[in-house]
Amino acid sequence: MSDKNPIERPTVNSIDSYVKKHASHVGETQGHQHPTSETIREADYEGHHIVIRTTYQIEVDGKPVTGHMGVTDDGKVHYHPVPNISFASALDMVKQLINIFPDDFNHIADKSTVAEEHATPAHEGHATTARARAKRTSTGRRVKKTHTDH
Amino acid sequence: MAIRENILTSATARDKYIQGVKLLKNEFTGPTTADLGIPGTSQPVSTYDLFVVWHHVAMTTFTPPSQSDRNAAHRGPVFLPWHRFMLLQLEMNLQRVLGNDTTFGLPYWDWAQDGELSPARQGRAAIWGRSYMGGSGAPVATGPFAFNSADPNSWRVRITASVNGQLIQVNRGLRRQLGAAVQGLPGPNRLPRKAHTAAALNQPVYDVAPWKTSSDGFRNLIEGWQDDPEIPSPSLHNRVHVFIGGDMSPSTSPNDPVFYLNHCNVDRVWESWMRPVPAGHGRAYTYDSLNV
Image (cartoon, rainbow over all chains, first blue to last red; front, side, top):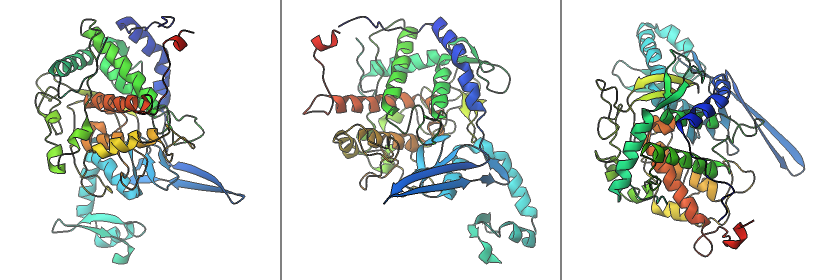
């Protein structure tokens, strides 16, 4: 076999120089923040051109989650910092993010617990009007609270 | 010539792999976190951790940038060749730190074999034993990558991704949650089975339009996106990440040395798929035809 393309084996020096040469690419990806994530899906059908724009804006305990989120053609959602799974439900996706990145939510969870312990029922009711929210009951059982709780 | 062997049947390959990744984890060739724009006090970045950064950067690079499905290493046709190149680079670095041992080949983990066990037993399979990769935990407390806060040379995760997708510095032990429940995932969180690998090998084409996660073909099935009724997504490669959980979940999943055992097995299945017909679906070149 021809040896026109001999294997270039890594050395300590080649690793150092290669990384420094391409380090700017890392810096570029560090700046990726997406307060909102928009996905545009397009298709042609029966002579018609379909465009679907989907925008997600995620918050956990009032803090934005800003990694890029996308929607695939089959309607599943995926979150780029978690590259190996898609979800049928965006709520399930965010719950799983809390499981995968506990360090990012620990301090938020602590504050949330304090806030919920001190929240008045009336105030809490307004806060959950527009969204399903899990809260801990006095028995510790988790229930889903929706606007129908009013 | 390097031969890639099953880590469960070759103690030599297992021991060299563990020794090699530990050497790379503690080899600092010059680059620092400041060079890479990672916030915090500037710290040297080990050769092993450079592979972690490399994988993260590829994953956060859309190809082309006009869409948001494919990235430079996943969710498209490049998935298999990109990771093959990564494996070769790691393998050559392991050979280097093992004393220029060019006979060393990356071992693979045949996860479909363990996928034949009951779900309850999969997290206790031999691969998770003290002599192999160690077990579940946050941090992992058994095996060669167990965390010991008093021992700075114990395996530490130093660079990981935040929930918002930025690289950050940490100093903690490796995390795994073998078989833990996943939100929205029906049934037990279990490994792929032999029938799933066989289904991938039976795919007649490598990839098809639109060349992403909705495609038919071998690549999208072995990567784990294709929603076959018998093999619901996440499957095969993806399912292995999801089954292990912890540090195998984010874009910095090479933090767990099991990452390479998974991908070496994926590469093995791909190589099998490419074998000439009738055993495979690939093309073979004669020796003379390569002499161009």
